[in-house]
Length: 246
Image (cartoon, rainbow, N blue to C red):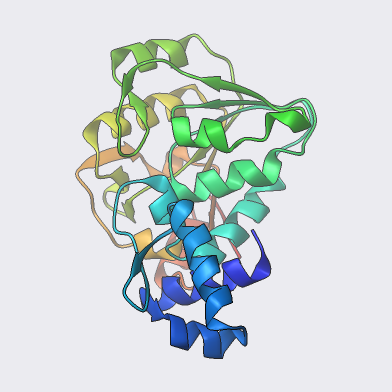
């Protein structure tokens, strides 16, 4: 993705909508160039074109959610990539930050990526030496997640060390939670099987409570998030597990 496209996503992430005129002024390029850029981003599923500009899509589709806090998520993904080494076998669960994360690690030699999400599987550049295992199970069309009992059986029969997990919410009382009960069931099984558990999430998820629990704070080895996390959460989390702020 070019720097200009990245800047457009950052502006939309902050403001949720932007006109061609505003983007032209901020990025110092022609309206025709902005329109071309918006078409590229719309084709990628990042936004929706509207008369005179564009808005962020609100959907459970990962490509749509990647555009929200895009720059922050890229920074989290880059930091998480530092924990992946040549020869690792890792499990990457669903989530927009995880989709950006697999792009960052695709150049590492001889790694195997197991995932429960078809979008993430497609995001991996296998031409650079990565192998991808997409587990079987029930396919959720909008999120492209794989869930259900068959998915759990697949996880039980696979060996992996590091787990990279996305979440929808966290509080000290509820632990890590998600909106979807079936996805939460898979996430809990992944955490149970993994040796090192990494949570990749932007700070907006802290303080939210969702329907289903993934795991407790004590189950996690490292949380990677952004600097907008409140001091209260920073202090409480740091007492229990590693916290990395980007």
